[in-house]
Length: 580
Image (cartoon, rainbow, N blue to C red; front, side, top):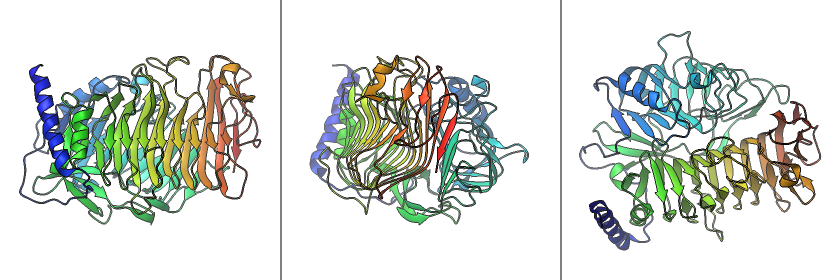
């Protein structure tokens, strides 16, 4: 046994001993106590800056130079800023997580920019994925130059205060995106964004819109009615919790803030001061590193009563990470990436209350998994309305970075689960992105009742992109592309039906509600027909609102015949069909 293997074995045994002593404990949200502590070891790819750190601009420039074009690279970075003022132009590339470490976004002021452009694709931002900015303020050095955040799926901006204008596109097309708990003092210009989802945010004015823009709990949403304008407005967010975030208190102690569960809200959470929530001291987290930790060490820590913090990198897992205790927090930094290498799920959550999973990327591997993320055991039956489980910024993919397959990306068996920005992507380009290689039947399967998703992006799966079997489901914003690559029509049919609908509400479901659904098609390899984009029972308890289908491109005589069931016009030649 190598020295590293000995160390890993000892570490696992110590953690397992703790698990025996604390087995069955209910993880509580534990407040800060004790004296100032030294900085935790977050590993080599987390960089913590304070205003006195020399050469910060050179450092962030080096990270960006490495990550600007690294669409399927293996490096992951988190750039963290302690409270204070910084004069910086921070360009955010792939797998880069930029975050402030204050209690409020205004505790960290970046004078300059925190921006994402698409120069590497000549202004086309449709592949500007996997990057994030959160918990800081941005003061542009020139009031006439907006802060650019030209992104597409898999990117989020949370808890950000922009003291000026915000531009959501570079010069070419963009296909985002997600904004939550943000305040923009000036105008938001959506530019070429095909679609966008905003929740609990505020701005002076929203300008622009193309196909599908959804605003939930936002102050001052744009005027105009669907379908003349592409806007869906929901006045208040019925149920939400903001994403947990890392911060440093006034004594230098690290903790993770878990914002409170809130109902019927609008606007940001932090404008009046510190957020309402519970801090959990970093000592109550197991800080995992991909260079030394395995599923065994992480599972032992979770069983012992620890929360889990995943530092940047790629974790090859020979077994699932098992979350079995209520109120557990699993928080990723720097696009921590989980790869189930043994044909299992990457993460399995028990049928328990109050789990928070945030900021993870899951890659399918060559040995196919039944699902990548499983919420609740298949026989789950308990109700968790008082403390729902939340999935924040959970992104899954099959192909692109590696050859990989999975039957479904996310399977939700539990009741009362809330998703907050999910992008589930069968790759259409990159490694293993071929019809017969990166096999992936479904993106999201919901079997639980009273499940809600804010911002659901599901693309290119072989069959139904989304399958909803549970009662009482609600979706605010849906973006989906059908698979690009069926080689011929007979390869993409079932029961005499041409193709598969993107969004499928099961025939037995009696109550379901969805707002702002966009389904698009590009059939490159053959003249392919999809009979309909959305299938849902036609009964009083089913409410499907503001739907659009678009044929982006593809072979002649290909497209979508109906928007929902047998309603809506066909889109066959780069057309758009809209239903209220």
